[in-house]
Image (cartoon, rainbow, N blue to C red):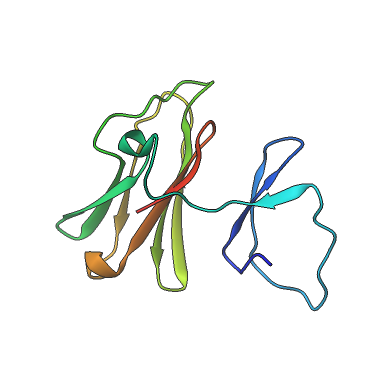
Amino acid sequence: MVEEGGLLKCKICGSVLEKVYQGPKTGKLDDLEELTPKHEGEGSQKHVPVLERDGDNVVIKVSEITHPMEIEHHICFIELIDGNTTYRKTLKAGEEPKAIFKIDTDINSLKAREYCNVHGLWES
């Protein structure tokens, strides 16, 4: 069962959905698959998010190697997760694959994830 905050992908259209609340009954989700974040392996050099502190901001870059941002292949969103709080920046083709969030939490307690429309979900 997908936990609250988990991401699901439609097998038919490719839309990505976030589960924000668990209802009292489990619905029929046959056309959805749970996205499991990757941390390493093939493609990690261009996908694993990197968190950096810049004063009062946390900067998230999609890896150390610049990721393509073309219509056919791009980062759709970047998320910063601080305990039960999730910050999200939605991206479009042509934009820089980077997000900046003003947050003073210790960077070592934060987690970042990003979704590539070709290679899926990646997490720091």
